[in-house]
Length: 460
Image (cartoon, rainbow, N blue to C red):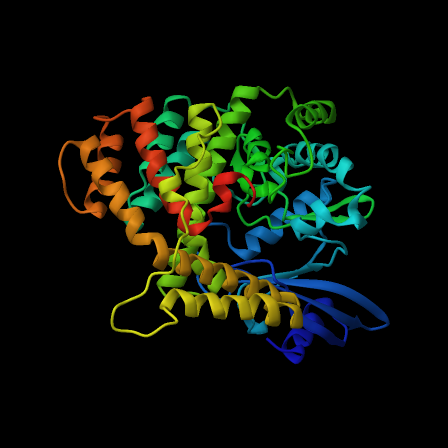
């Protein structure tokens, strides 16, 4: 990617000699690239964005299809950017398209906390409801061919993905069993954005400016988008505001109905929130595997694998219908640093702590943009490794005998967890309280390493 190559593409497609300035990769997008730039096209100066894929991507529509969806939504009055052109082979830039840049903020933590968005925040729930209603009303005849993915189809899709990777997740098995029993049916599939959430919204001081990232769009149940907007991960730590960290469910449903979106059944909404929680866990595993298999090496993708436990925890809470119990002291202890007999101090954990503190205290304040974002991710990754070195063996030693007793025989921990998942799927174990409690103990132990703040509600 360089200015000359992008300028040549702009010139080819817009028909006038162009120059490009300020080409920069935006921090958003763990596996699919987004670049912002300014283009001088004749006498005009345009703020543009290029969306492209650096490598083959699992899931989602291709970039030309995404461009067609965005264009159709824009024409139907949705706050979607104007598409300028789709890249072709002659551009030699890969698969992608160029659209207008909408100025504003997309970083959820800033939107939810900065004073600059004090006026905007109370307006976002109604604005999201109105935009969702418009998205779901886009005439399907104006859209490219899209997959019809209802509740049952999505459940089958997520199960197939998990089976591909072969890593057992008893919490997800419980979730899929319960969700399959109550899967809703939609009679008239509508356009579903598929990733309608805080983080894919452009917000300025007055309110919502644009809806971005349409790569997961499909035809299906409109309530899927509303449930996804309510998933806990998209509240970014503001857990008392159920809708995106900025609003409440009643306001969202009422505003959606008033905008022509129909009456929202609350049980159906909760079902889609639970499926959205499962979906994000599956996506985190996909992203981690993208890194592990070498398709895209990224510290951000790598650490997403350790966020799966957060979604397992949230899913169990949704299945149980009540807040999870307080953390077990045995899994929340970050005591003395583990030290090997042969090596001198500092121990491995203490060395990691030193590097983490250096990045956090010295490097993070000296960089900005994408480098700052990935430095923060690296700080979190080092914290995970540090905690695993300190308390990982203790947690394994605590969980293994409890799980062995529950299953009725002893074995190594990995085998016991795999058996628990298999027995839940087969139906020999159901989602009664004892199975839920055992599964929650496992997830709690994982969170004690991956994100202990999540157990107390003090961190995303």
